[in-house]
Length: 433
Image (cartoon, rainbow, N blue to C red; front, side, top):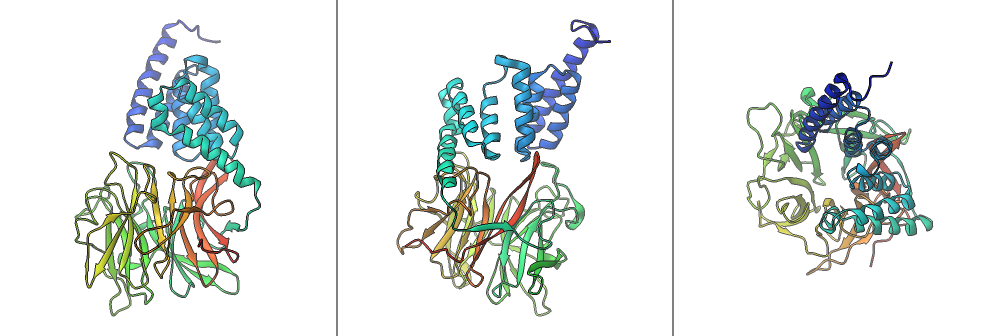
């Protein structure tokens, strides 16, 4: 028997749903997306006619890379609420269709969002930029790719997020970062409720042509917090690591994400990471994802220290002797108001690969390359279809000996997704002149 909509029971449920939605919005604003999703689901169960609960469930799923579910619940919200639904629903639908590769439909929803939203909000969301990305992707996908991209064979991809490749000089040992369940300390990040990052090591099996012997038992490289190895010197005795223990239960915490140096001791194990004592490198903001030239004298890294005006930028710093100099941002033809991240410098310092959502791309972050011209850097070149997709593509590295690129990208299965490591046959790749 259906309860009449104006009954006391129904009013109680609707009131409970409103409270749950407000609690969910608070959790969402604090980055606790999984907790928020539980609140919004509970609100929807209390009041199945609430478009607001469905709208926020859609936003949570998009944030968690579950684009199929984001689209499904977004459309449910629109069917339930009609013209009462927040106008940003069309932006969410556009994003979800964009990530799923439905580019024409994405453009239609983006255009509806622009027509309905205030100009300032539309500009803040960079919706026209998203439309431009869709059009660029449509043109890219018409051309035949010069590259073949496939998931790395072996035990590196786990179903959890796996990314951030670092190759040794022989290209037979690979380090990578994963957020799988056997992370050191077994801790969960209280914000996104996922396991902390650890660095893992894998060895290439020449006979099987795959990466195996995966282990995160790397001594002091891993802590109970976020650990990401970013660089190892050609001799294997020195490296750079990003460390963040601000939310971990440790005695001495970092201020944020710090760039640390690591050294191999005479026993063949790594000493504890030490944060670089340089105020232009490590700040109270995010600083990390460093890459270094083979001679160890030039480092590029990512920081969000100008977050009030921009997202993340790439910085460069020289080393003189044992001390690092003053870090400076890359020029404006590299850094944009968007997000520049995960740089990789070729060993000779000639070419810088990086990811960005601020330049012309296919969607999310694309991978670009720029050439060191001595006193300037060339305008970035998009690596195009075959390397880039309509989703986030990050952590690109290039193996000259294998003529292979490695990149982290989304593996979409059904309505969900996780980050996996891909390899790209780049035997036909030529560096831009």
